[in-house]
Structures are given as C-alpha cells and as structure tokens.
Length: 292
Length: 162
Image (cartoon, rainbow over the protein chains, first blue to last red):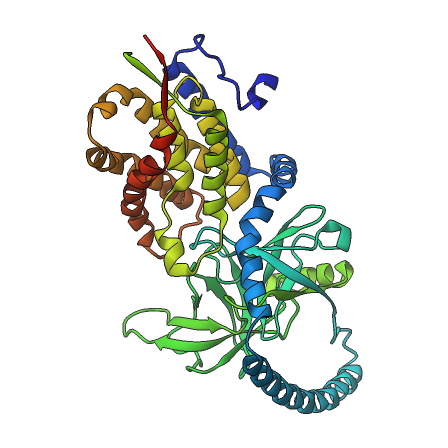
C-alpha cells in the first residue's frame, strides 16, 4: 500500500494489465464507498487529507479575496448610503431589543413561576464562512472554527435572521456544516401561531417542505415556523422559515406545504454557533423523545 | 505506435492543479450549473496523450482528492473518473484518428457516464436533489474538451519517434 501514495511515478507499469488494474481500483472504490456510507471509520483519513489539501483550497478562495478588495475600493456614496441604512437599522433593532429585554425578563419571571428550568439565552460564537459547497445541489458550508475553538458535531448554526444548519464534521481548525435546505436535512419545528408541531425538510433548493400535516391542519401562508427544540439538536424558539405555499389537494391525506427559510441561506459571511450545555440538550432529548 | 507525444512534466501538474482549482472556485449558481467537469476532462486528456505517465491510479487518486475537497462520499468521484478514463484509455488508438470536433462528440457518452455515476451514487446514498440541471454539464464539458486541446497542444513535442 505504501507504493500507492506515490502519485507521480508510473505505477505497476508493464506489470499489471490495465484491465486488472481497473478491476482492482473499481473494487477498492466500491469498498471505500460502502465504508464511508455505513460508518465513520474513514473520517480520520478524510480530515487528514483535507488538512494537506488546505493550500489548494486557499488558492481557490483567492478570487473571493479579490471580490472583497473590490468592495474595499467601493465608491464613497455607496458606503455613506450603506452607513445611513445601517444606522437606521441599528436604531430599529435597538428599539426592538428594548422591547425584547422587557419581554425576556417577563418570560423569565413567568418561567420561574412555572418552575421551568428552560434556558432563555445561549452562548454564541461567531465563525466566518470560508467556502460554500462546490456542488450546487448540496448545501454545505465550511467554517473557520474547529475543535480548538470548542466546536462540536451537531452544534446548531444561526445567522441574524434564523436557523441556518448544524455542524456535521469538525477538524482541528475548520468545520463543515450542513444547511437546513440540504436534501439530507430535516429539522423539528412548530408553527409559531398555534404550536402545531411538524418537520421541515430541506429540498436541495432554496425552500423547505413541511410533510405529514393532515389536510385539516391549521396552517396558512405567512405563518412563521420556529424550531421546536424536540430531538435536542436545535435550541427551541428560533425562526426557521415562513410558510409561503399551502396546497390542499382534495382526496390527498396530507397538505403540501413549502416554506422559505428565515436565515439568509445565500448571503452573509458570518454565522453564529450556538453553544448548548450537553447536559441540557441530552435531558431534553430524553424527556421529549416519546412525544415525537 | 508510430509517434510518442511528449509534454513537459510541469504542465501535467499545473493543469491538474488548475482543474481542481476551477472546480472549487465559487461561482454564481447558474454558472456553477454550467461548470464543465474539469478534473474528469484533464484526467482523460492525460490518459489519452501520456498513458505511460498518467495511469489509472493517478486518475483514481484525483477522484479521491475531489471527494475530500467537495465533501462527497469517499470514492464517488474516484469511481466516476476511473471508469471513463479506463474506457478512454481503451479507445485511445481509435480516438486519435478523429478530428477534434468529432472527438468532443465521442466524449459525450464518457461525460454522461461520469455524471450518471455521480447521480446514481447520490441516489443510493439518499443525497439526491430535485433539480435535473446537472445533465447540462455533459454539453459544456464536451465543448470545453476542444478548448482544452487548443490550450495544451502548443506544448506538445514529438521527442521520441520510432
């Protein structure tokens, strides 16, 4: 196997027929595919090789660095316009925040009355998006924080507007996160208006699907969907999306519902990683599992 | 074999690196859908013109590299590059007889095999998505084959002739 690492020399030259070589690599690939699909055993290899390949990724990121330079030299008027807009937005957010502070303290008081131990605030960590998925059909992000910064697998990811996804693999200096819109991803949610629980599935496009809601479910276009916290992976109460299509097909058992993600999936360079104490999340998972 | 084509060693390395980088560069969504399968094309090119230097192992290993870089299942791109490269290697003598534009037409099935394997493994591992646009890559790839030839043939020298 040590010979296999030497990619530059003509391997097995004049010793194995191409067909035999082809067969060997075919079987090897299939074995690797199965191993990678069924277990995590190849993960160390993947993250080690990824670390070796970092320089290549850096080169590939250069054009976006130039893009930033372009922004740096952006005209003065754009910047002052943006400044105006941001100041307004800041003012608005501050106003909203004041109200929120009042609401939060009220919420805490009421929760204390109910003797509930639910956490209202979580610790967050800011990470930068290094790159997005190269395959337009897969919705993954690479972040510039890794296990050294305390990132762990399954850590939820949010942006300023809502839930973005979760971390799926961590190496020392970087980590990879799946977004809620990836076809592989589902998140337990509830309708903010009435607490109706369901699941939001990613579609590999820029919308979410809410399956398994009966035809008479109380859901309308414009309903806000928030995370329900069931399953213990995501914190409860963060916006996930807004319902924008409800199709009632007579004779079907379930509604066909689509939602737009609240988080800005395609924009932004920074994300927030929410840190949940492991004991809280596991106890939530245990106590709420039977209900899901 | 009447003539042995030769290309400088650094060109192989640089072109492979460039193919990987062009695969990784961020593009707007509609452009990303049109992105040719650069790594497959460069692997097939070197398999065709320098089989003694660029073998099946290198093609396979490039696939593994692509898997690690794009986060796909390990072995997915490897197998998808390996099979067209093997077929291209087998058809080497035949392909050389045809003019360039006919070669790119003959390449369409190979890129289709590549795309189909990727699509198929995505399906088996439940990572399929709802769009069908990935098939357009087959056309852009075969167009890019011509570009690749125009870019790389100036470096060719017929050093060894026998």
